[in-house]
Length: 130
Image 1 (cartoon, rainbow, N blue to C red):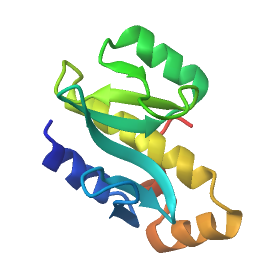
Image 2 (image 1 turned 45 degrees about the vertical axis):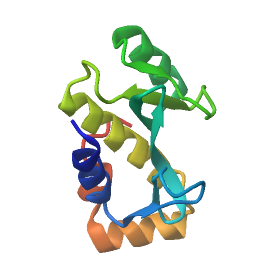
Image 3 (image 1 turned 180 degrees about the horizontal axis):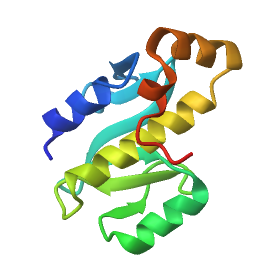
Image 4 (image 1 turned 90 degrees about the vertical axis):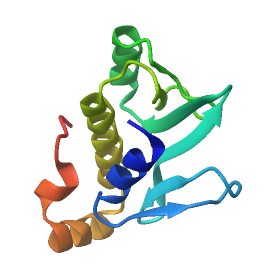
């Protein structure tokens, strides 16, 4: 999965936006002003940082060698996915969905309910096991 395909999937999430708060070449993906993903290059590798439930984050790191503690992020709550490795596209999408859902569920109730009214709960929590 290349960076364009990942960006397209990230931007397909309801009310997702692409922002560049850190520099001109590190896209951050947000919903309602809260980050749920970040794409970066590190040591020649494309990394996708995604938010993750702390217990699930450890499990994923044990199962997939291309899931590591997040580079430059809180390693308890964020994983880095090595995009150009052996991680299947479906797993990358599942982890994006998980990250997006965690962030949406952490929004203020009024904001979250507004998203649910505009897009439906299924669109917001698709693929989530939370």
